[in-house]
Length: 235
Image 1 (tube, rainbow, N blue to C red):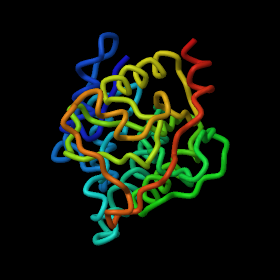
Image 2: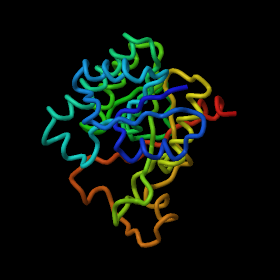
Image 3: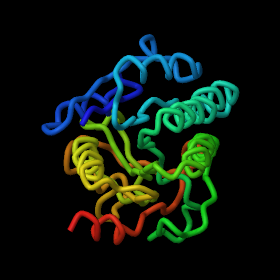
C-alpha cells in the first residue's frame, strides 16, 4: 500500500516514517505540495498514485497565531483540508485527518466520539472546520489525538489541565495500525487520563508546574477522552 503524507517535513510525518514497516510512504513538504492549491494536490496524487492520503499538514502552534492571523488559520486548516478531501474524492482514495481533542468542550472529560463538541479556542475551531469536510466523504478517517512531541518542548506544564495524552511515536503506531484495519469514521486517540504535568514529568524531571490561569490562551480543564471505540478495534 502506498501512502502520501502532507506536511512531510513536520515532526509527526517523520515519526510515521520511523514507525512504518508495512507501507510505502511518500512525505511531501509544503513546497512539494501546496494544500491551499487544489491543482497542486491533484498533481501530486496523479504523480504518486497513493492508496491513502494522510493529511498531517496544519497550522498549530503558537496558539496565539489563530487569534492574531485567523485568515491564515482558515486558509491552511479549513480550506487546505477541504482541498485535500476534494482531491481524495476525485481520485477515490482514503483520507486520514489529524484532528485534536480540543474540539471537545473541556469541562467534564471522558468524551466519546458521539458526544457534543464545542471547540475551546480558535485553533480547535479551525480543526473542526477540517473535520466537517472529511465528514462529507465516506472514505475518511478522523483522529482526535491528544499528542505530545518527545522531548517536551516547554519548561513548564499545566497541573490543572487534564487530557488523555500520548507521545507522537505511540500515536504514529496507532494511526498506521488503523490504516491496516481499514478503519473509517471518528476515533479518539490517546492514553490514560492525566494532567499534562503528570504526563510529561515522567520524561523530563526538570519540568516546572504551571496553572492555566497564568496564561492568556484558553486552556481546557478536562478534554480527556473515552477510548472504548479505539480499544475495541485494536483488540
